[in-house]
Length: 244
Image (tube, rainbow, N blue to C red; front, side, top):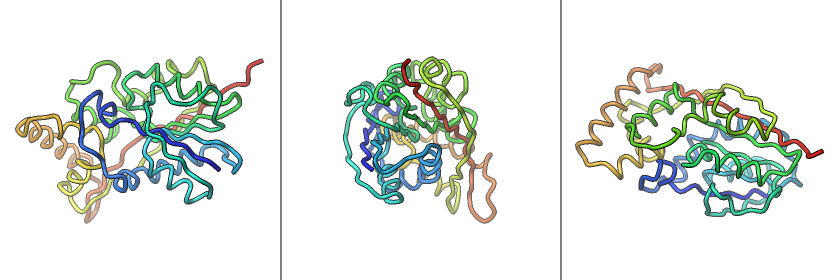
């Protein structure tokens, strides 16, 4: 099985901010459970061509579990650097949702998917931990649609409903660390909107932001002897019909 990957620019992931680089191994750890859920949502066989739009480590983890080869390609989610009807499966784990132009990104993942193929997306919901943290990090500065709009049924159906037969399933993943401060330090490296804010803001403004982020962690912490915060996301499964 061949997997090819498009790396979203981190600046685009935070609505044109200029974040620091995010360590791949940290991002992979956070994405492993949702990545497995996305990969398991549709049948994937060795002869298929599969595109994952997002973090390289997620695709590599999938390949390690299933066998095959992975080709990493740095590019733009809008437009994707592939021909029409190229891939049997298109997967995106918290990737396409961060593209600035939602319509363009939606059209691209549909364009490169073969008729009869499947598209699967994981997207944070606006009212979950990651969605609320994203809103804190952007602090109302991002223009257009927020990335977490992809975590709402209405937005998904408006962007993809005319092109795909859709199913949307709720899911959740835990963010864990030994303390609230340790989790916040982890997220400063692994959560793209927060990493972008840290790079873009003056120290005083960023200190205010992190105070709000820490308060959110403490509000939602449900751990015993550790900090554990559940974060809701949706798994969107879309079937591209064969033209009649």
